[in-house]
Length: 259
Image (cartoon, rainbow, N blue to C red; front, side):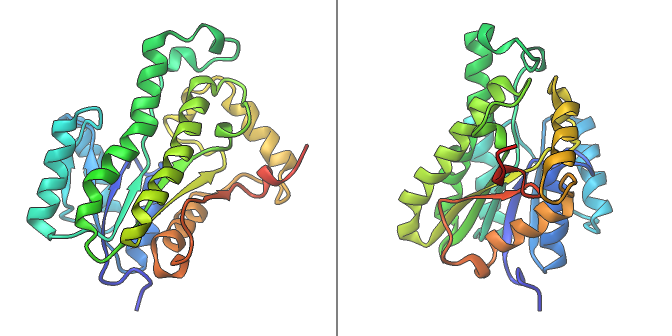
Protein backbone atom coordinates (compact mmCIF):
# COMPACT_ATOMS: atom_id res chain seq x y z
CA UNK A 1 0.00 0.00 0.00
CA UNK A 2 1.40 3.39 -1.02
CA UNK A 3 2.05 6.29 1.34
CA UNK A 4 -0.65 8.38 -0.35
CA UNK A 5 -3.27 5.68 -0.84
CA UNK A 6 -6.77 7.11 -0.40
CA UNK A 7 -5.58 10.74 -0.55
CA UNK A 8 -6.80 13.23 -3.14
CA UNK A 9 -5.09 16.49 -3.96
CA UNK A 10 -4.68 19.34 -6.41
CA UNK A 11 -1.46 20.00 -8.29
CA UNK A 12 -1.16 23.48 -9.78
CA UNK A 13 1.78 24.14 -12.04
CA UNK A 14 2.47 21.33 -14.50
CA UNK A 15 3.75 22.99 -17.65
CA UNK A 16 5.48 20.04 -19.29
CA UNK A 17 7.54 16.94 -18.45
CA UNK A 18 10.39 19.10 -17.15
CA UNK A 19 8.50 21.01 -14.45
CA UNK A 20 8.90 20.27 -10.74
CA UNK A 21 5.13 19.82 -10.53
CA UNK A 22 5.39 16.98 -13.06
CA UNK A 23 7.89 15.08 -10.93
CA UNK A 24 5.85 15.72 -7.80
CA UNK A 25 2.81 14.26 -9.54
CA UNK A 26 4.87 11.28 -10.67
CA UNK A 27 5.96 10.50 -7.11
CA UNK A 28 2.48 11.04 -5.67
CA UNK A 29 0.85 8.79 -8.26
CA UNK A 30 3.44 6.09 -7.58
CA UNK A 31 2.41 6.19 -3.92
CA UNK A 32 -1.29 5.79 -4.74
CA UNK A 33 -2.57 9.39 -4.66
CA UNK A 34 -5.44 10.66 -6.75
CA UNK A 35 -4.14 13.82 -8.43
CA UNK A 36 -6.23 16.64 -9.84
CA UNK A 37 -4.69 19.15 -12.25
CA UNK A 38 -5.09 22.65 -13.66
CA UNK A 39 -3.75 24.29 -16.79
CA UNK A 40 -3.31 27.86 -17.94
CA UNK A 41 -6.25 29.05 -20.05
CA UNK A 42 -6.23 28.17 -23.74
CA UNK A 43 -6.42 25.04 -25.89
CA UNK A 44 -2.66 24.92 -26.42
CA UNK A 45 -1.95 24.84 -22.70
CA UNK A 46 -4.69 22.29 -22.11
CA UNK A 47 -3.19 19.98 -24.75
CA UNK A 48 0.27 20.37 -23.27
CA UNK A 49 -0.80 19.55 -19.70
CA UNK A 50 -3.11 16.75 -20.84
CA UNK A 51 -0.18 15.22 -22.73
CA UNK A 52 1.97 15.45 -19.59
CA UNK A 53 -0.77 13.78 -17.53
CA UNK A 54 -1.08 10.98 -20.07
CA UNK A 55 2.67 10.40 -19.92
CA UNK A 56 2.18 9.93 -16.16
CA UNK A 57 -0.36 7.21 -16.87
CA UNK A 58 -3.42 9.38 -16.18
CA UNK A 59 -5.47 8.85 -19.34
CA UNK A 60 -8.55 10.83 -18.32
CA UNK A 61 -7.26 13.48 -15.91
CA UNK A 62 -9.42 15.81 -13.83
CA UNK A 63 -8.20 18.96 -15.54
CA UNK A 64 -9.53 22.50 -15.19
CA UNK A 65 -8.42 25.85 -16.65
CA UNK A 66 -7.03 28.31 -14.12
CA UNK A 67 -5.72 31.83 -14.34
CA UNK A 68 -4.49 32.12 -10.76
CA UNK A 69 -4.69 35.92 -10.95
CA UNK A 70 -8.48 35.65 -11.12
CA UNK A 71 -10.44 35.15 -7.90
CA UNK A 72 -13.41 34.03 -9.95
CA UNK A 73 -11.42 31.25 -11.62
CA UNK A 74 -9.95 30.17 -8.28
CA UNK A 75 -13.47 29.99 -6.86
CA UNK A 76 -14.64 27.93 -9.83
CA UNK A 77 -11.82 25.37 -9.57
CA UNK A 78 -12.28 24.70 -5.85
CA UNK A 79 -16.06 24.63 -6.20
CA UNK A 80 -15.67 22.00 -8.91
CA UNK A 81 -13.38 19.97 -6.66
CA UNK A 82 -16.01 20.07 -3.92
CA UNK A 83 -18.70 18.97 -6.39
CA UNK A 84 -16.67 16.15 -7.93
CA UNK A 85 -14.67 14.87 -4.95
CA UNK A 86 -16.11 16.41 -1.79
CA UNK A 87 -12.76 16.89 -0.09
CA UNK A 88 -9.04 17.53 -0.49
CA UNK A 89 -6.11 16.00 1.37
CA UNK A 90 -3.24 17.94 -0.19
CA UNK A 91 -2.39 20.96 -2.30
CA UNK A 92 0.72 21.56 -4.42
CA UNK A 93 1.43 25.17 -5.42
CA UNK A 94 4.14 25.17 -8.08
CA UNK A 95 3.59 28.39 -10.03
CA UNK A 96 5.57 31.59 -10.31
CA UNK A 97 5.80 34.49 -12.71
CA UNK A 98 7.90 37.55 -13.36
CA UNK A 99 8.39 39.51 -16.56
CA UNK A 100 11.50 37.94 -18.12
CA UNK A 101 12.67 41.33 -19.37
CA UNK A 102 13.51 42.16 -15.74
CA UNK A 103 15.23 38.86 -14.93
CA UNK A 104 18.64 40.02 -16.09
CA UNK A 105 21.77 40.90 -14.21
CA UNK A 106 21.82 44.60 -13.38
CA UNK A 107 18.09 45.13 -13.93
CA UNK A 108 16.68 44.79 -10.41
CA UNK A 109 17.10 48.39 -9.27
CA UNK A 110 14.96 49.63 -12.16
CA UNK A 111 12.12 47.12 -11.72
CA UNK A 112 8.79 48.87 -12.49
CA UNK A 113 6.07 48.87 -9.87
CA UNK A 114 3.70 46.72 -11.92
CA UNK A 115 6.37 44.08 -12.60
CA UNK A 116 7.16 43.91 -8.88
CA UNK A 117 3.47 43.72 -7.96
CA UNK A 118 2.63 41.02 -10.51
CA UNK A 119 5.56 38.84 -9.45
CA UNK A 120 4.50 38.87 -5.80
CA UNK A 121 0.84 38.38 -6.70
CA UNK A 122 1.30 35.29 -8.88
CA UNK A 123 4.29 33.77 -7.09
CA UNK A 124 3.25 34.31 -3.46
CA UNK A 125 -0.26 35.66 -2.92
CA UNK A 126 -1.79 32.85 -4.96
CA UNK A 127 -0.57 30.30 -2.40
CA UNK A 128 -2.57 32.09 0.29
CA UNK A 129 -5.55 32.44 -2.05
CA UNK A 130 -5.50 28.71 -2.85
CA UNK A 131 -5.00 27.77 0.80
CA UNK A 132 -8.02 29.87 1.77
CA UNK A 133 -10.18 27.90 -0.65
CA UNK A 134 -8.59 24.50 -0.04
CA UNK A 135 -8.71 24.55 3.77
CA UNK A 136 -12.51 24.10 4.08
CA UNK A 137 -12.21 20.99 1.89
CA UNK A 138 -9.56 19.48 4.18
CA UNK A 139 -12.16 18.25 6.63
CA UNK A 140 -9.85 15.68 8.25
CA UNK A 141 -6.71 17.79 8.08
CA UNK A 142 -4.26 17.95 5.22
CA UNK A 143 -0.98 19.19 3.88
CA UNK A 144 -0.01 22.02 1.52
CA UNK A 145 3.34 22.73 -0.12
CA UNK A 146 4.79 25.48 -2.27
CA UNK A 147 7.94 25.42 -4.38
CA UNK A 148 10.65 27.96 -3.62
CA UNK A 149 14.33 28.49 -4.41
CA UNK A 150 17.45 29.61 -2.50
CA UNK A 151 17.20 32.99 -4.26
CA UNK A 152 14.53 33.77 -1.66
CA UNK A 153 17.21 33.85 1.01
CA UNK A 154 20.34 34.94 -0.86
CA UNK A 155 20.68 37.19 -3.90
CA UNK A 156 21.17 35.17 -7.09
CA UNK A 157 22.41 36.80 -10.32
CA UNK A 158 19.48 37.71 -12.53
CA UNK A 159 16.85 36.22 -10.21
CA UNK A 160 15.91 39.73 -9.14
CA UNK A 161 12.23 40.35 -8.37
CA UNK A 162 11.53 36.64 -8.47
CA UNK A 163 13.78 36.28 -5.42
CA UNK A 164 11.73 38.91 -3.61
CA UNK A 165 8.54 37.05 -4.56
CA UNK A 166 9.93 33.74 -3.32
CA UNK A 167 10.85 35.39 -0.03
CA UNK A 168 7.24 36.46 0.27
CA UNK A 169 6.15 32.93 -0.61
CA UNK A 170 8.23 31.41 2.19
CA UNK A 171 6.89 33.93 4.70
CA UNK A 172 3.36 33.24 3.48
CA UNK A 173 3.98 29.54 4.15
CA UNK A 174 4.87 30.24 7.78
CA UNK A 175 1.80 32.40 8.40
CA UNK A 176 -0.47 29.83 6.78
CA UNK A 177 1.08 27.16 9.00
CA UNK A 178 0.39 29.26 12.08
CA UNK A 179 -3.27 29.83 11.27
CA UNK A 180 -4.20 26.49 9.72
CA UNK A 181 -2.41 24.28 12.22
CA UNK A 182 -5.39 24.33 14.59
CA UNK A 183 -7.28 22.48 11.85
CA UNK A 184 -4.51 19.88 11.47
CA UNK A 185 -3.48 21.40 8.16
CA UNK A 186 0.26 21.61 7.61
CA UNK A 187 1.97 24.10 5.28
CA UNK A 188 5.56 23.77 4.12
CA UNK A 189 7.80 24.78 1.23
CA UNK A 190 10.43 22.91 -0.75
CA UNK A 191 13.41 24.95 -1.84
CA UNK A 192 14.58 23.00 -4.86
CA UNK A 193 17.93 23.52 -6.49
CA UNK A 194 18.19 25.13 -9.93
CA UNK A 195 16.42 23.00 -12.53
CA UNK A 196 15.96 23.48 -16.26
CA UNK A 197 12.30 24.41 -16.35
CA UNK A 198 10.75 26.84 -18.84
CA UNK A 199 10.49 29.55 -16.21
CA UNK A 200 14.05 29.02 -14.95
CA UNK A 201 15.49 29.43 -18.42
CA UNK A 202 14.11 32.98 -18.48
CA UNK A 203 16.51 33.99 -15.68
CA UNK A 204 19.50 35.77 -17.15
CA UNK A 205 22.13 34.23 -14.85
CA UNK A 206 20.61 30.73 -14.76
CA UNK A 207 23.40 28.89 -16.59
CA UNK A 208 26.01 30.40 -14.29
CA UNK A 209 23.99 29.40 -11.22
CA UNK A 210 23.76 25.77 -12.36
CA UNK A 211 27.48 25.61 -13.05
CA UNK A 212 28.35 26.96 -9.60
CA UNK A 213 26.03 24.50 -7.85
CA UNK A 214 27.43 21.53 -9.79
CA UNK A 215 30.97 22.58 -8.85
CA UNK A 216 30.50 23.52 -5.19
CA UNK A 217 27.48 21.67 -3.76
CA UNK A 218 28.48 18.87 -1.35
CA UNK A 219 27.03 16.28 -3.75
CA UNK A 220 28.87 17.93 -6.69
CA UNK A 221 25.81 17.96 -8.93
CA UNK A 222 22.48 19.63 -9.52
CA UNK A 223 19.26 18.21 -8.14
CA UNK A 224 17.07 15.81 -10.11
CA UNK A 225 13.35 16.28 -10.51
CA UNK A 226 12.52 12.94 -8.87
CA UNK A 227 14.32 14.04 -5.71
CA UNK A 228 12.01 17.01 -5.30
CA UNK A 229 9.07 14.74 -6.12
CA UNK A 230 9.99 12.29 -3.39
CA UNK A 231 10.54 15.09 -0.87
CA UNK A 232 7.04 16.31 -1.70
CA UNK A 233 5.63 12.86 -0.90
CA UNK A 234 7.28 13.07 2.51
CA UNK A 235 5.77 16.49 3.25
CA UNK A 236 2.33 15.58 1.93
CA UNK A 237 2.13 12.18 3.63
CA UNK A 238 1.65 11.21 7.26
CA UNK A 239 5.40 10.62 7.55
CA UNK A 240 5.78 14.36 8.20
CA UNK A 241 2.83 14.70 10.57
CA UNK A 242 4.84 16.88 12.98
CA UNK A 243 6.37 19.15 10.33
CA UNK A 244 4.84 22.51 9.43
CA UNK A 245 5.99 26.04 8.67
CA UNK A 246 9.30 24.77 7.32
CA UNK A 247 11.39 25.22 4.19
CA UNK A 248 12.97 21.91 3.16
CA UNK A 249 16.08 22.36 1.02
CA UNK A 250 16.44 19.77 -1.72
CA UNK A 251 19.46 21.23 -3.48
CA UNK A 252 22.30 18.71 -3.13
CA UNK A 253 23.44 20.59 -0.04
CA UNK A 254 24.32 23.88 -1.73
CA UNK A 255 22.40 25.99 0.82
CA UNK A 256 24.44 24.47 3.65
CA UNK A 257 27.84 25.81 2.60
CA UNK A 258 29.53 29.20 2.62
CA UNK A 259 31.36 28.87 -0.69
